[in-house]
Amino acid sequence: MKFSLALASLVLSSTFAFAAPATLATVNGTAITTNDANAFMAKAIPGMSFDKLDPKMKRQVVDQLINQSLIKNQVIKSGLQNTPAFKAQYAAIKDDLAVDMWMKQQMSKISVTDKETKAFYDANSDKMKQGDKKVTYEQAKKEIAQFIKLEKFKAQMNKTTDSLRSAAKVEIKL
Image 1: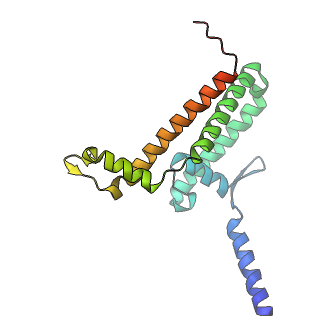
Image 2: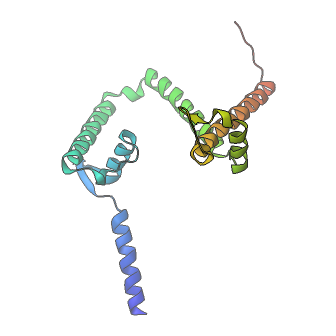
Image 3: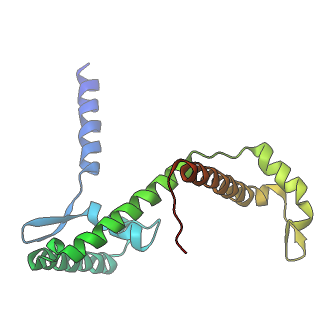
């Protein structure tokens, strides 16, 4: 029993040790962590992690994060975020971001079956070519599924906007 508790304790402590972000630098007392570096890398090069970089590249990423932090602090000190122009643009961006997120949620709810992709492939088999060579169903399946999903999404959005328009008072003044 003691051994299993000690093992469980070791596993838990090592799991948390890996999960805790390491501090790479501090700027005016604020830590820049491996989580920050990984988030930066995910935006810069999707699929790349900070840990996979060589030491020189890691240093460049940390330097970039330090510079960003310093600029952010300067912007905050400038008071720009309290100006009416900033607040108006921020509100617009916030709304656009919410719409983008909602659209992604709607898209993620759409599914495509193997039966649908196979039927599409069979109906369009004469067009399934790469150069002059016929593409097999297995090679085309993923792209067909993405195409069908996009078409379903477009149809769903058309129904949604038609419904919203019919329930709203819309005046076009062209």
